[in-house]
Image (cartoon, rainbow, N blue to C red):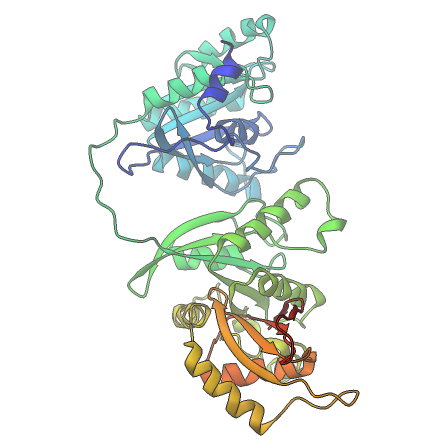
Length: 472
């Protein structure tokens, strides 16, 4: 069996990793190394899927990004980091600092070096830091694509961090041996880990580039968890962090800024946008950050529509409130009335990620949105409500016919979905009227509502279903 086959044997038939049997304990492996040595490609190889953004230019990964991995039944957490360049300053220096933080928090370190290039001065400097860290180190000699290239790996003994393990992240050669070495470096799994019942609520932070998503995550986490720079687009991969707020644990995910429509993107920006969309789909509540110091843009509205289409609970956070003066507030109120009228039901908070102002209002808004997202109304109450509403304002007559609402039921929650049975198709304006009255009576604050109509002629045995329509 070759190395690639051995690696694939560690995966289940559908490509997912097998279930772990370690009692829930998940040690941390930090993947570090210089720029463009193949760290993210190796992470994807370990995960068995393309999760980390990869592009043939250095500096694509910038934050520390965590993933759940599993090898031979042992679960562990992989932390992908940006290129480590000792002595660098500015944004590159911040990337290096994030890599160092990942090493400090890790149980073991996977040090990736380009075997084709050989040990560089930067690699020697990183090796020195790792030697002083007293953490177990596994040295991955990457880009060893065939037997002839294995001789190049021997030169990496000079780094002084142990035996180099030849591997090809691109082709999978040697992946099994490398992962066996990683498992050997990890601490033994405890017999039993008692965890809390249930898990933290999942929150995605989304918005245009440079609206303060990473600053907000850092402020909430109380540490430099995500890179912050004046240049927009610093975050490429979703960055998640467990944060305790209001006596509860929340899993916040900082996402890449959405620049424009997906069709117009390419390279790392394209895959970053895909991962942002995936983070929204995986979230329960989405906090859309809007730069309150600037006029609302079409991109802000498009992002809000994306969250509504995904059916997620929604909170609007107007950031950079410390930069908003009286005149700007006057115009902002009018922009909200004009451009955000369709999401009047979403909680709004005015915050400053930079100063921490009003961040205490974020948790109540998220809890309110999640409560609306999970609200269910009994069918009997709904039909009593709809009878009163229709009696007060029946559907208008069109073409000599007037559709009659027969009954309504709630088919689902998260988001709330309703099915209206009627004798004819209900116009969009009347559906919006029903939605507004639903919200006025039952709340559903912070949640989109999906209303579909099924037409049923009273004289017919069956009915023809009309296509569903999402409202919000």
